[in-house]
Image 1 (cartoon, rainbow, N blue to C red):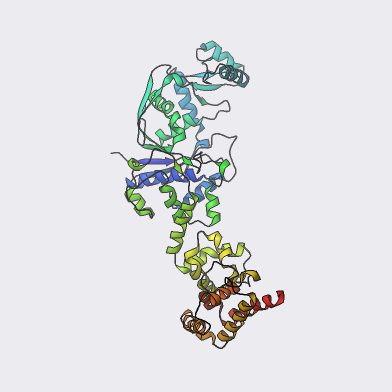
Image 2: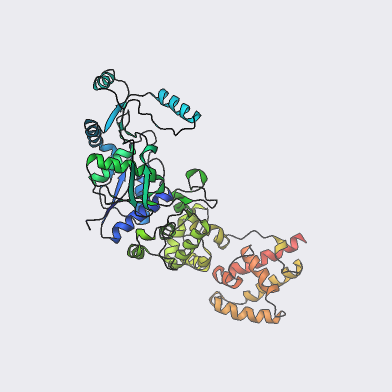
Length: 479
């Protein structure tokens, strides 16, 4: 087998889509699995839709995901001469032609076809213009395009690496524009010329490009080139099975980066949105992906984007991080949320270690741990345990404060707290709820949190006693 060469060819019309990242990943994995090359191409020939900063966004997100490319990126807008020469070659071969149809005529044609419930195809009006007619149009500087003169009968058949044999009736295709009136090529011409020039062996792209493939194969034949292998990936779908798009939610990779998803979690998640390893394994590091990836295991049906599953993946990878790594990752989110005093690394390590099993994504962290940095808001009605009276909850909080106040900070470890509070509970009726529930809520201000003794060990003796007394006083003030 000759060298495997794949490419990722995004258009810089906005931020990189999560579906685009999946396409890049599959191309990268296939190339690396075969010891080949993964190349980057920027398809910027649609000058009306360019977005400033989009190219850098694509590059930054590929780097963030760990998908390095093996070339200096190919920029289509810098290769105009190559496309022009290719188009003129087809014109000279009588396989393409000049079209002078105005936008007004094309719109009128479309309306007529729609009214008759016919396919909205170009009708070949300029296909048989004589050489003098073409020369006159060019001499008059009438706007024109170059169209591909597709065969009008027969079929195009090819083997898709995902879908098997695919067949298209040429009667359903129209004469595609190859060069626009602004002198820039369309996607169809530029893509074929570049894939040939870059020696691409496998074109792995989204399912939406499947209808374009027969036109591309015919272009390869027109140039006398060998076509690459094609593999069309299943669509990414919303839970209602509509197509995942920019209009239906957060689909830019940046959205997930900002929310605090780890690159390894996002990459692992999108790997399994269209590819099945054939086993029960779910967690894959990049080297494992490279080793196991194959086109044969790509699904044909669309993949539903399950945000809960992404959260699960992210939680798995967050729990594999060391506390030191998490502190570094978390600090920017804490500062952005306005949490102060996060410079005490030793204290932050204790806090994050306590919450590590509960973190879904890094942006959740400020809300989970803010009570470690400032006293929580207390809803007095939530302090009592079940049928416990507020006054009874306040009394037990004062007794806990007095009890813990007798210990030194040195003895305020989780082990000592568990031993001593077990004795305290035993001396106060033996039931945990009436003691530990008010304590938990007084320290954290929330019903769901780590255990009260774990919180107390991190807060320390002085702050723990201060919060217990504060909560008890709030009950008395409102009684």
